[in-house]
Length: 280
Image (cartoon, rainbow, N blue to C red; front, side, top):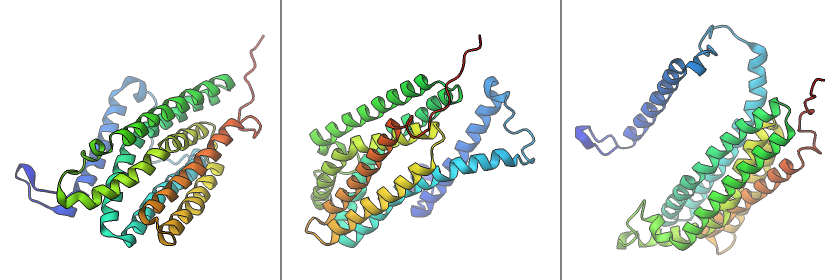
């Protein structure tokens, strides 16, 4: 982007090029690891890749498509919030972008925990181990929500220090955007626990191959509850940008509450496997 190390300054085109290069290198790194690791190589993931296994394909599509739409619904909520913020003002949009980067950075840990929860719950699900399912899900919830509690405290207690990662908070030219970012961080800190909860709960439910209903919860919670609230508070009340962030919080609270309730009621909803029988 900026032309360091003798490279030409390509600006936005450089950003796009670097993104493509990073994704390509990550793909190649995965291939190298899969082919060089003895435990992974035995599965022959690239063997007969030209032959279609349609039963497995449609199983993956049935489980995976709702996951993709769930992620799209959440990402779309935050992208749509940036659109609303741009309609409010440039300084608000700049503050929103920085505060959102802070929240997204904190979100990476519970997002990773959610992936682990899917794997651990899925292994217990395949073994028809109900106790293992409960232990894996509970551990993931405690880890994800606990970490987000720490990030919430950090945002509340040290907002200037957090924002200084991205911008000079003492520069006069940044005073307006820093002021708005400070306001938005307060709301971000408030919804940290719910952001971590919804991510881990969704991951645990995926381990039970439960993806369709969580998708409906996500679409309705984020876009009806969250975005609807953001539009109303952002444009029909004096809260403006803070109202948009409250809308984000509402969406996360609704989705987190419903997903955690569904996880808690997993047995009553018939999401658990039949317990394994021990041969005599």
